[in-house]
Length: 234
Image (cartoon, rainbow, N blue to C red; front, side, top):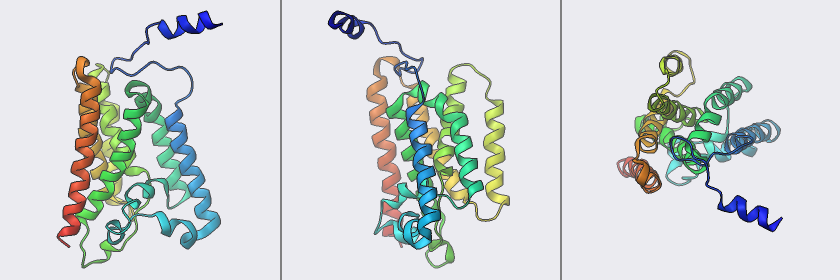
């Protein structure tokens, strides 16, 4: 058995076209995100607004004093339809992205896009208006970040991207015409995910890891810097 393990360790690791290790089995990160959102939604229903949602939802007026809300708000949802739509969209693009990018880049894409979406909400909100006090919940910003990244992956792989463009366009329009949907969060997540995804997808093969880490740090720093600047100007 020791010999078998040694041979397995010495065997070359298969890689995707974007440098991620080829893994068999379930998309662990995607499933973890879905489970976290589902458990969080259940707690929202059981504990009520004040018991769970109000403690984790993002709102611009709370972002400076409680910055964890920039992330935790992505795991909350406003209705059963809201969470079902987001989790379905995540399941459509998530496993493919997780396989192509690998787990750490995929996780970073989700989290940084979620933060970018809520930062955009704060940037567009008026401190003197109701928008500054209005809570925002949902994984939509992170999902839009994945939409932007998967579009680039499809183009990089030479696959048709027209269907994804249609999905992005329809979902973006819905944010403008349907009440209580944050188009600002969608836009922020899409821009953040597209920029970060471009670094992951088009990095030179020889420097893929360095570029991936550097891009994650830089994009996250820019997003956080915009939030700091926004609150400094309030």
